[in-house]
Length: 578
Image 1 (tube, rainbow, N blue to C red):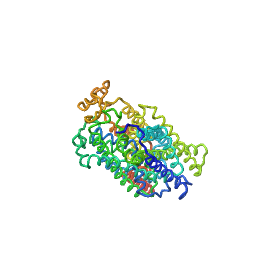
Image 2: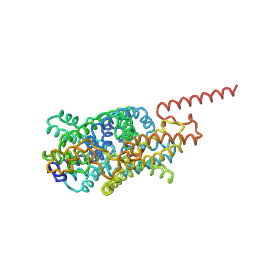
Image 3: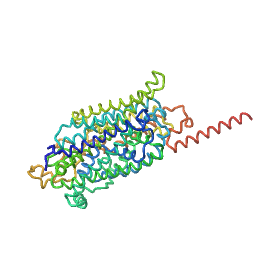
Image 4: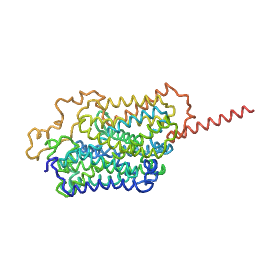
């Protein structure tokens, strides 16, 4: 086996990687000089609302499944079993809720920034609060998105991650800046193909080694990796059917309905019908990628079943498994390692490009445009808007590169930033749901619910956690293995550090599975927001509200109240004349 970070990229591998990056840049150049040439803000940010269903659907999936997901899910299955794929059930439950409740509201609003909804429903303070929370979380996360794939190149070649960050960051910034959302969507489709190809290289090389798909399944079954269902209702169990379905479904709901980059992609389509179709296609493809990634974890386990690289101390973390596999297995076939690296980088680039475009849109729509209108007292010029938006995409690209360099120095805060990405989703979903589902909710309730829920979720997210134990691993056939590692084959808890507290010694709330954070944040926002709204009742009556700011069933209820009020008013006038 080759050494981790031993420098195994050949000329063909380098050519494959360079070609993939060049194609991404070329797409940006093409869309800069084609069509409307990005002369209006609507074309730059929303593609002139003329995008096709399938590319948008694939872009929705690609921007959500970052390289962190590819590396993390495969190692999750390798170490803890296949159970995580149950989360896809939650995706399919969430999809109709998104399609028939949230998307109709956004398409009626027709806003570039999703946070404009909160201003229309509650007020400017709520818009600013939610937008700032999303903004800060996204700026912190985007560096991690770029940093993660750079570790792959460093692991495979031994080259510095700094060069990988710089080159890929600049290319992504380039095509996102000049090509706008059209270039981002088309590049996402190309990068999705590379992601699948990277996973297929892992799977089919393992299939070739072990003699087919059946042996991979058999090896997984023999080693307790086919643990699909755990119906334990205990919320402190790391993964159960309930936490994966409800927690995973709520996370998908939050990512799709309160994430600017996702909603912005829906708004590039002409109408709601097209958006709904794109959503369901996206869910299917997302599940296909999830299942493929999970199977790649089983494929790697079949390869390393008798000589685990973690216990043998070749690597220190599970997310290094897939890069190590590329070092061990793919380097002997010219071009395969390059294809694998391109796929991992594509997963990061697609998410980064989505972030850059959405941050630019939020900056202009939520901060600069309102400030301009207030201080200048005139409409924000569209020509200035497009120039400023492009400049901001470039600026945030530079910030992203800087954050990626910083991520290497932050150590434990890197994990903290990923936790932030999870705990922010619940409060944001809660405040949007408060506005769309609860007519009597007001701005005081919305702000109180969002901030208090966010603080509680952050407290849970940053609390000390018990260490998750792995399923049994083996080092039986490792050459020159040290005796202590062999003992780990028998002792399944050997991965625990001696000075760490046991699961039972940790405070109960700290033991709650991370999958429940988004559910807790969501419910707390709704509960506190509703109570505060009742305590500080608004003078506005239900029939005075704009029905277009509510989900269809509530909108129909408000319209009935309006008609009832109008009929009573006309009857009163008629009786007055008599």
